[in-house]
Image (cartoon, rainbow, N blue to C red; front, top):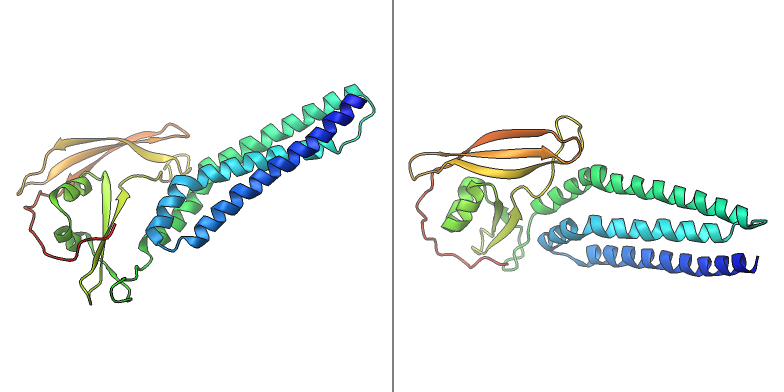
Length: 246
């Protein structure tokens, strides 16, 4: 019984430590979101860190809660201690699997909506203080060099060009062309993404090219391939403007 009492005392300490780490992770994450005013910086932070931070936070929360709860259960002997440990471990494992699946298959739907709002939220010009205009695919080409246009043509990178029509200030933002998984047409989970791209016909200044994109679902394994046209490679027209901000 002395061993059980010692076990419970250490369990309470470990549980509190684990829950404190959970609170720290969550607080730092929320503080980062609140204090980051630039939409592109917030976009990059969310896509690189949010799911990972939420998973680590969930692990410490579930483990801390399980250990703390277990340490407050009274038992009448060693056998009851074995039973309570088994039940605690089983419930903990089920909760961890549930949260992991939630973050992998369902949370991306929610995060994608937030990222879309951040990407297309009007930028404010540091020169005039006025909202900037997001250029269309056709309008933005004059602000992109040949390498940038080539990246967009093969869908590996996507550029957004914002311009302050009053001062002429421009800002170019870089995004991964197929960074996010989309909804699978078969299982309906947000796990359908491009795994490979292959240029079938290279474009010329006068003839369109052709690109094949290969898709695969990370959940149900569905595979598919689709062909896309590549716009003719235009000669780059030098344009004098304010240097784009990073």
